[in-house]
Amino acid sequence: MATIRIKSSRGVYPVQCSRGELAHTPAVLARLRDASGTFVISSPNVWNDWGRKVSKSVGGLRAQNTFLIDDSESAKNLQTVELLCRALTHAGADRHAVIVAVGGGVVGDVAGFTAASYLRGVRLVQIPTTLVAQVDSSVGGKTGVNLPDGKNLVGAFYPPDAVIADMDTLGTLAHRQYRSGLYEVIKYGAIADAGLFRYLERNMLALLRRDAATLEHVIYRCIRIKAHIVERDERESGLREILNFGHTFGHALEAITAYRRFLHGEAIGWGMYAATLLGAATGRLGEAEVVRIMRLVARVGPLPSIGKIDTARLRQILAGDKKTREGEVRWVLPRQIGKVHRGIVLPWKLVRRTISELPELAMKARD
Image (cartoon, rainbow, N blue to C red; front, side, top):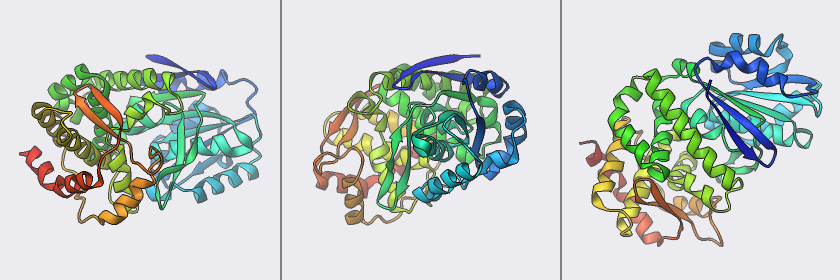
């Protein structure tokens, strides 16, 4: 069992990450003293695959304490949070309740925001079952939901009490969902670990085959990187902004397509293409490293087409991004593999031109 401990505003919490971790759920819950009840939030598909095992691990979980929600990005909204809070009330959840989120990023974000909001905060355990959630969204305490105007615009910083990342759960992921997570993995190498980036270049085929040893090594390294960052900047006032590499355009792309065309990681794939090209256009990134980033993203597989983008609407959505300050969009751009600049303000003319050229340049990266 590999355990990474993360210091947060709510105390130190463990991230247990290896195969077979679900078996340790009883021990994790036992450490949460005075718990009055356990309430699971999951999705129908995840629960179909893992519900029996989770129920057994939790111990005598009652059916009325299990709430299944739509885990599509379009259902990640305030209405879902309200429905969950009302369900918790009807089930008798009090301030000593424990919410256990079992699922991918949408389930984790919604359940986390519900835990932060219900009775002004109850305990939370994350059991991420997708690659995106295991390497990224379940760690660090960001919770939230989307508005039609943008992604994750309503939420809270609410670190969990524990994270149980069982890599065996990735075995039931659809291949598209699994590939979506690999874009977030690439992000970590690009922003903070040139050695990890080289490892991904050498081992992408093994990752695509879901080789267990390769996957375990990569997930552990990604979580270590995120732990290092969020311990130093929990509320994204500085260093943590580098985790948004690829997310400025990626989040806008999700919003402009009503959260229905792209999986989150796929949008981030396009976002990393855009940020890399903007890094080159502003003289921050050399051609050789541009090619390496573009090619590694392309090796994960084809991305859904971005289609024709309403640039006026895109500009409006970008202006509402969480990282915008005084109306100016702040980009994270690479300066070399493993290092980025954050808080970069760019002229709209350059952004618009780069976005218009993006499909053609991304196609060249696949050749």
